[in-house]
Image: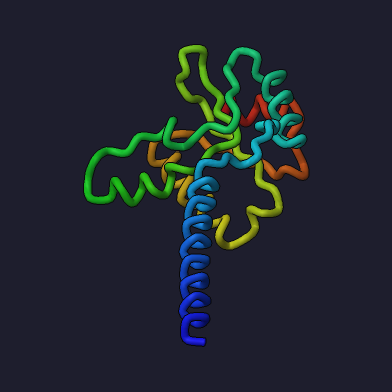
Length: 158
């Protein structure tokens, strides 16, 4: 009986060790796995509509979409540099209107219903502070009522 218990204990311990080795290998294999990637359009339907309207209304300018704020706003090194870099580093603006030499004329934001949320208003406020601090003109329109071509031209040329 004593021998049987020892054999069972050895089998259980060996089984446990093999199981742990298997799980460790499986975990390592999963780290090397890639998620399923897929292509998607960079602009929503409403953003595409607005993009084409901007291009038509402003043929003398370059229209860029979904531009990172950190690509158009610099921050001088100082005590608040990291704080403000963190606030803008992962944010984008919907459109940037530029001269042919890429001088920025205006930044355009489309605000949908999500912009009414408190957290989104704070994000928009931080973005606006950085853009205005850099001397950039910001134009905001509601996504549910896109401006016509004449309104676009008038707003950008103000």
